Image 1: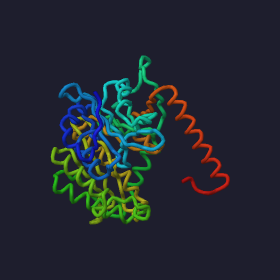
Image 2: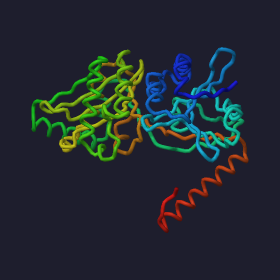
Image 3: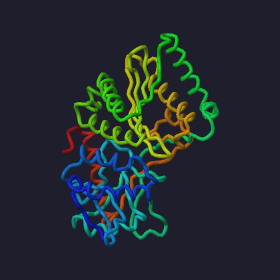
Image 4: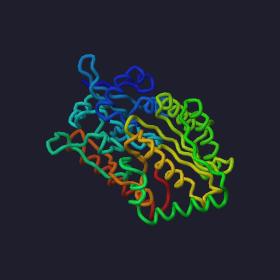
Length: 351
């Protein structure tokens, strides 16, 4: 039986069951862990966000985070800070009964950012009416074997670019270093340094910079501290002389490392500090052997794909109440598309 409850007030009550399901259904994915999801809710959830829970007696069997929208749609709770929306279900057919607990006018359930390695998609025998739409590609690097073999298998152009950047940086100064920050207290300070670095760049003008004074910075500081308390929250830093020129935030579990955010000092752009940081991180993690893979959970373009040895499509999944709902939503989308086309031709805004 499904029930829906406001998530800001009630997630803590369900947290232990959430983590049990994340371990069982999503292989303990860090982006599904309550150490990530909890801060995501406390910093970014609003009154229209809720937790849907399917229970049998006292056992919680399925969970997902949702947000109400207008025009008969309910969608995943999907702040910009996450690249995957955890949907803790065994089969998509479970979702048909959920419509009975959603507002009566709900025509479709939109589940964003579903990773085929950590999600459930409709099968040929599924009774629900679904659509699967490609969103972005993500990149994975398997850390089996040794770093030298991995690096020699990368495109020659990538190898030459990194070699050129590292030689240029070494020529400019012999005093540069790579550091890994792991203790909870040190990680909190490293996230502050990350924010101080990022706010100097273009993201400050765009209003998207991570900093201790905004909810983004406070969110990442809390997430990294929580994971660092388990030994799975890391900040990688690159220094040129005494100046921090690159920083990357990452979290993990017993098998995977996930990169969350990267920033660099734009004054050192000529040395490609972000790419050098990626190179040094991979070199270190291959050697340490504490993770089996690195997941670059982001919208991977051709440049990033050169680093990966596996790519896969992240998709949006739409589940409809019935066939009439499917036609109604498709008509609405066409109408919105037509409106957007008219506005592009004649100008104006689309309130």
